[in-house]
Image (cartoon, rainbow, N blue to C red; front, side):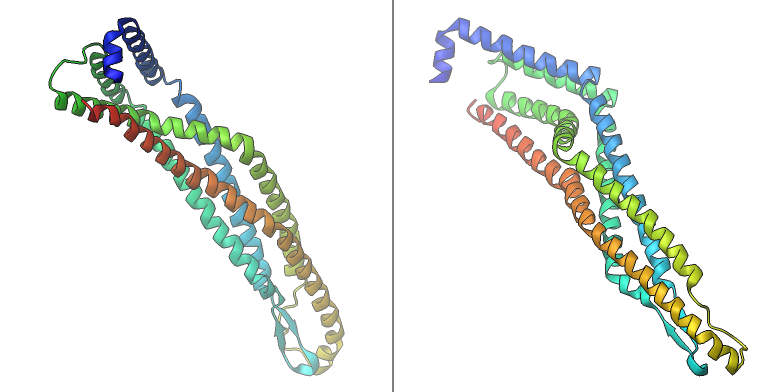
Length: 293
């Protein structure tokens, strides 16, 4: 019925063809000029920088926690050696930070792949292929009866697939950039800053703990050991308090770790996959009129 109506209304058919031609020529202009590629590339670079900064903060935090964990406090009560390792209480938090660093590394790899695909799509020979595909589609718009139905449908499907391949990466990056700017980016920067401050404070505590930790004494007489025992007890309590302070700081930072994990997974995995699926469904939907030819 739609085909009969368009055939009986030349003005409607002509206006539709003009509109289709304008859209295709606009797509060609966007492809050749790089108007989509440049902002998409800037977003990919900025997101990759944020991810790598957060990864570096996570690895730094992991390192200072490991220093505290390895600290041992040695006591010599009445000549009997006792070695305490209160830093091992930080082991669960350290495991969380280490797994978080893996997530950030994976996010950085995903953004790096997207950036590489964007550069490949913007390669000038690919623009020539896109120009050829648009020429094929324009020919189909103005000469809809040229060639056999199956040949027309197959050619137009190939042309639409080429356009999809050229535009899907910058379009995904731009849409993700908009979503990130509205909902994710500020939260990521705030949470990363909290982790940086926590890493600095824990680094200071780690240095103090390392300086106050008592090494295992050697070649001391019984009198010297008894004389040092009281001082060692006070030092061990002070070290324990500092480690407990580090544990409290890291416990407060755990919520920021969860926030950053969810945010970067959304930005680099879930949102791109959802947009890619929607774009693919739109491409399949555009094939539907071709099946009727």
